Image 1: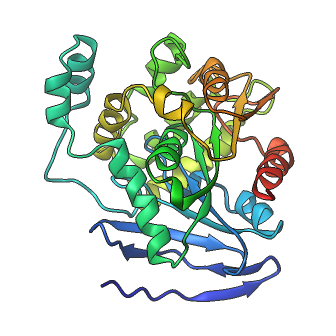
Image 2: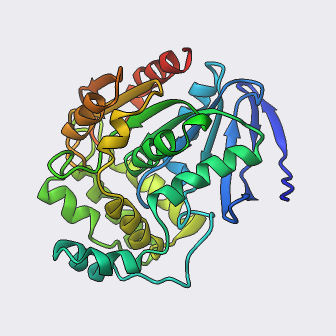
Length: 312
């Protein structure tokens, strides 16, 4: 049995909770916070590879909450203030070497958890919050986790929004060499170097709206909240080793929205197009001037699309 204490403060957009953590029924500590009225339909936001819940900007969450939704964002395991797997160190180069050489048995042996385990964290969090079913929105790796939730735990998912993500099939959603190099290049360990290196992410940001100051601000807040590079290779292992989700997506009966930016070089738009092709009845929204990011100027378009899906 888990008992959760959570305080709330009333602001102009409704009830907004301070971040707390919960020891879920599957034994994983998950850090989360909320926006909006708990009586409204719930939207669970799942962030991507190595990125804390801060990646879902609070103002973006408030926009969704202002449309009559109870918005929950959380840290994936091995990131932010959620559970860490310090007893299972994984060397990033060893993992990439094993995968590149096709030695998936060795790569599998390095990984202490799977993408399904990460999906089960979101389900367990909803259960601890007393929410039977939620609209699930995932970005990048978070989109893969959201797909896994929808296919493995369909009774808990009202709708799926897969944003800037892919199906796990080779040949779809591939990165450009430049974007891949940035993704796998560790940032400096000191705060100043870490913040400055965030500008490398312009390699996959919107060509029109990419903003170095915004990238640096998120990096600074993330560093101060929880600098934890050790979790990156374990999350990567779970993501890569999940393989193709194509067959499961073909059988999916959950209302589905697929969003992808046409400027995305980290996960090519073919990843989103393929996802929408596989899921019966899925709606595909390809957005001009959006890369592997969510520029503030495009928030109204993103919020409108998500709100329209979650009205069903």
